[in-house]
Image (cartoon, rainbow over all chains, first blue to last red; front, side, top):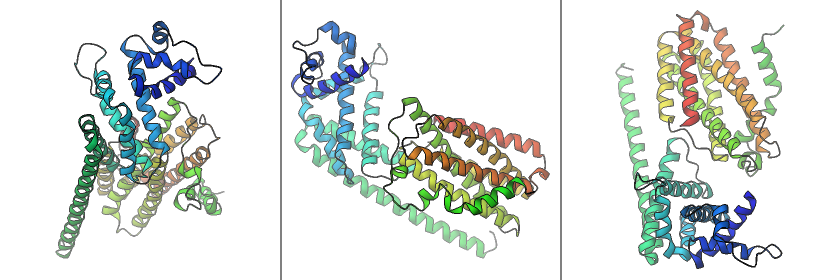
Length: 213
Length: 221
């Protein structure tokens, strides 16, 4: 049953561009099953609820499946260029842009009254993309820089994605400007770190020559 | 006839070519799946266990490096103790190099407490070294006892991982090798009068308990 559900979700993600993140997309997924297994009628509302959850839970399942598929799509086009990987992910949004604002709002809606907004799905979405992009591009950061690298990528990608929702034509250029700015900032930080190291070495030498160390 | 530490050293000399860690430190084929890929056919629970295991191992090697760094800062110039600490530190550097590569290979999140591990390790090493070389050795004895047991427990957990992926048997061999190295350090510490340290029992208990707390924290965070 779990495999069948997963199969239907995968098919439904391809129907999002025509039907949006709706129960109808889930219902019509059975029509697109391989020959021999395809149904002649869409699933009933009761069947959709049984398989994917009642009300908005079904739509949330579809949105999460679509986001998972986005991660798989990123990995299917490996590149050593971080910029290329993130642009690929932005491209994945393009066919379904009109449906995304509502989809993200639905994910951020809490299951119960308070708090009014749940930021965790958004953070998880950005973190997954940042981690996957880092892995695909061959990032070798370790220890604390593992976190800082991914945090900065997550912020940049989130900003670019939000920009894409309002101004899709300039989203890719906006992402490029963020990546360029970030690498310049990182270079400056590295130079400060290097300079600090030299200063520390000089002071150590001075203290040693005075017999203090 | 030979002590256990001597037997381990002799065995190590004859098997120098066979060390599992050479797959990472002297790779013959960088694209070999054993050192470049992670098993995908494991359950979510096994993935979480692998994740926390490697996270703790990496943090432990970072802490061990900084403990020896702290000890070396104080005792590095001593004619007998200095070279001993340097030898053990060099081995920990190799361990850390391998753990860093395994962390990347298996896509493990490193602990966010890494800087705490460095500061804590350096502080522990320096303070025990200031108490004297026996106290430094007692610190090493306590730490390596906990780490040796920890690697042993991990080996038992790793038995449940499927051996079909080449990285899994290699990971087991690496953990076995590192466990043996840590136990060798324990033997060195005991041979070099760790048990003559002032308040040895108290020092060992405190250091050992601290290590266990650190392990539990790094598993989660």
